[in-house]
Length: 104
Image (tube, rainbow, N blue to C red):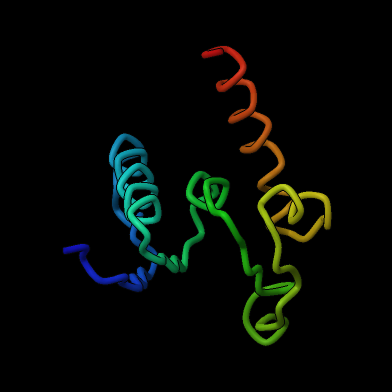
């Protein structure tokens, strides 16, 4: 019998993790999704954001100047929208594309 669908909500799971452990976490998150589960991650780590299927970007700034949805899109679309997160994410996505191209 198939296990039930589960919603996982993680709040900044990369805090305190070494980069190698962040990569392991990303693989685990992908396995959960591939297994039919839903994963919601509140995160500032750009490598994790770049791997998301969907990003809800809050802003436009922090504190009292934030808290509004400024983008709800794929990581690539967030980059194209030019939000603060999108600008920071651009280099991470470019690096990811270069790595995938080098691997073949």
